[in-house]
Length: 139
Image 1 (cartoon, rainbow, N blue to C red):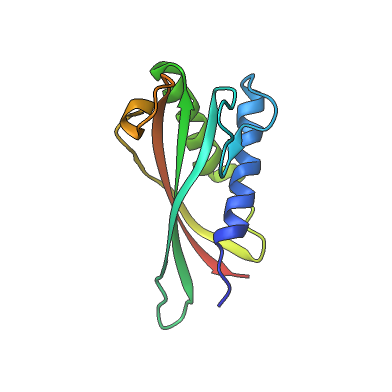
Image 2 (cartoon, helix red, strand yellow):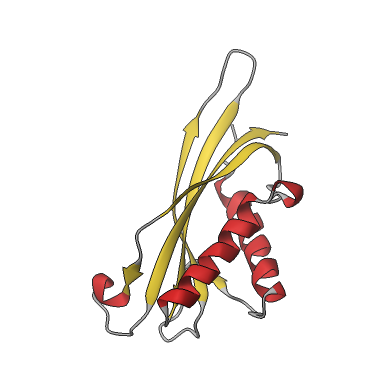
């Protein structure tokens, strides 16, 4: 069994950047590990999980991935979180996951807001976590 985690992350980053660019935030805006002082707003790829959900007839995998939309205002962080939701749950334009077909995709949750102070910083940034859930099958 091959893991869909990296292909999903690559496809998700591409989709989020397309949606953000369409809404006036062009350029590289999605990061695995943003540099200190990165211009706001941006999205960070966070934690993920992978669980086999195979049945007798289907070998499928459920993956979840958490993204955090960061901005210097809570309102804009929520707007960017909405862009993440649009990018990753639109059935008419699914994330391309090389080597896998998507069976289902859904918003799992939009978590409680974060502040940079909660994370031990003092940059006056606000974050909104978004977790999506996909069930995929190897192509």
